[in-house]
Image 1 (cartoon, rainbow, N blue to C red):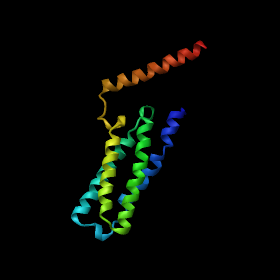
Image 2 (cartoon, helix red, strand yellow):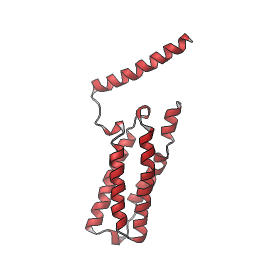
Image 3 (cartoon, helix red, strand yellow):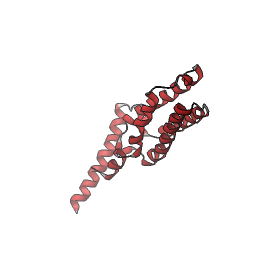
Image 4 (cartoon, helix red, strand yellow):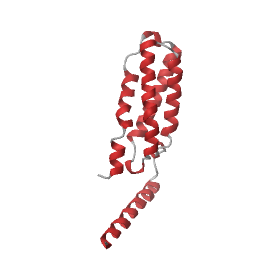
Length: 144
């Protein structure tokens, strides 16, 4: 397996992402369930699901490691802020959580899988370029 793909597959973001999902889906204290707070939590959950879809559809070969590197600490911060909100019911945490969710949403837009699915023609063009590069490389190796 190529080193690049190993770096992506073993990235810290993919270890932290399920923790955030568990925090969002676990029970919330009744004092956090007013309409306003509930809408904020629902919004963050919607953003989480959207980004989950983007992450599920990554093409490892075209995933920029720098984007994953920038997302991982924000995921940790968002999870910590939501857990803090659950424990001490300080609603300033919710403002911070929304800010972190916005940051993650913006960062996720830099991943190629965030774009709409390619048409067959566009997909063939990208795949053909990938194949051509591999062929060129293997032909060069055969010459050695």
